[in-house]
Image 1: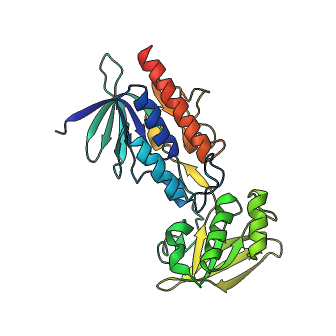
Image 2: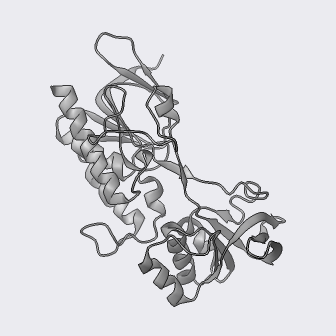
Image 3: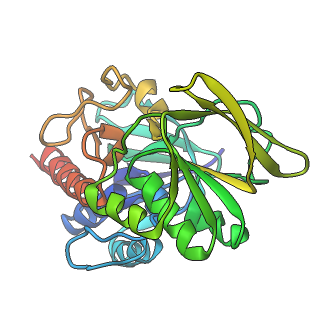
Length: 308
C-alpha cells in the first residue's frame, strides 16, 4: 500500500496559472504541491514568441515558462510527468481530499484545478494515422524538421498565425487555410503575415490528409466554389482551438458551463468547497497574463478559506 503524503494545497496542472498559484499558496504559508501529467508550462511551451506579457518586450514561450518554474520551485514542490487519475473525498471529519496517481497517493485540504485545455482535432481521415509523420499541433516543437519544405497551417486565430510566421521564418513554404473569409488573429499578426507573403486559402477546409510513410498531400474543400482539389505538402500544422480538460472536475461534481469550462466566482471558487480553478480551464480570455492572475487569486482564496 502506497503511503499517503499530506499537503495543505495541491495544484493540478503546472502551466502559468498553476505555477503562479504554487508561488502564492506556498508564500502564504500553505504546504503546497504542484502535479502535472506533462512538463511545466503546458501549451505555453508551444508559444513561438510572447510579446504581450508585462516586463518582456519579447520572449519565447519556453524561456518564460522556465523563469516562472525556477521561481515556483523556490517555494513549492513540483512533480512533473505524473498524472492525477482520481480525486475523491476521504470521508474523514476534517474535509480532506485524496488524489490518486500512478506513482502515489496524496491528501490535501484544498485543490486548485489548472488542467487547461487540449488541442482540438480536425477529425479527418489521415490525421491520426500521420501523427508524428507530417501531422503536428506545434510549430515550435516540430518546425525544424520542415525547413525548406512545403507546409500547411490550419486555423485563423493568433496561434495559427504565429505558427505560420514561425514556420515562414524557418524557411518553410507556408500556406494558411481558414474556413472563413477573414482571420480572427489580432491585427498586428495579420499585418505581419501579409508582410512576409504567406498564401491564404479562404473559405476552405481540409477534407483528408494523404500519404504513404509520411504526409504527401491534402484534399481541400472550397466552400465558395463547392469543389474539391488535392495539392502536395510535406507537413500540416493544426491550430483550430482547444477543448477544456475537465475530466477531474466532473469526477467531483464541479459545475461546468455549456462549453465544458469550469464555472468560478470572482475569487476562483467553484461550487465544491475548497476546490478552485484557474487558467484556460475556466474559459474566458486565454492569455498567459490572465492565467497568472487567476492562479494568484485562487491561491489567495484557498489560504483565506483554510485559515478563517
